[in-house]
Length: 257
Image 1 (tube, one colour):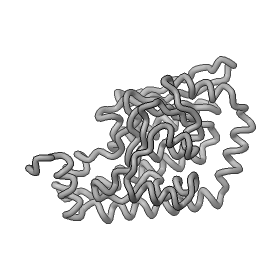
Image 2: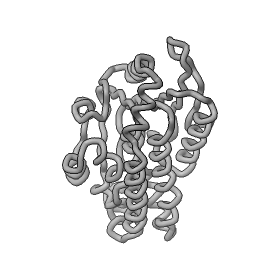
Image 3: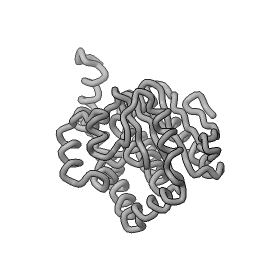
């Protein structure tokens, strides 16, 4: 589809169609505006395909989250808030699309799924994790506000207390942890093959009915409002001098600009 991702319609062994989205964007699928736009176009194609099952895969890393260099460069041009509004709402809308889509979405996670990209994992219906997979917020390191659903979808999935502790402590949850929390359904050295097997094994009508019943209109409305609040909090923090200093320290460990 683009040099950042490709899409194709394949068949599961049963003959049922599965829409495959393969991520291969620069800097470990960093969530820059163009890549997020590509993801939305991929979901446009998914909706038009008529497939009831979909698989998202990646290379060595699922996604490194927001592009710190992009935010840093925008901040130096006094465009930090504008750049954030090019990025965060696209991500939030993608999370909502995944939750509301009448499609069973599986994600095969390798390596890092950090920052806002974790929201794509949280919004997936099925997740398989490679042994090296991990999810970590990193917001406290950069001084950013959470986005992607860390305060919107994650508490719905694992509860307020565990979500709060994970986010504030900036802990790294590895594949076995994700499995224990119910955020992954399997750990495998071949997460893509395992995800396809899970998609093959589940009954489509039952799983889509379950998805509709779990993501009720009231629950989706709460998530939508919380995602909007995340966006505004992110925009408010991104231009602050202390955030710029943290980004500089992250990008220039020697302390030089």
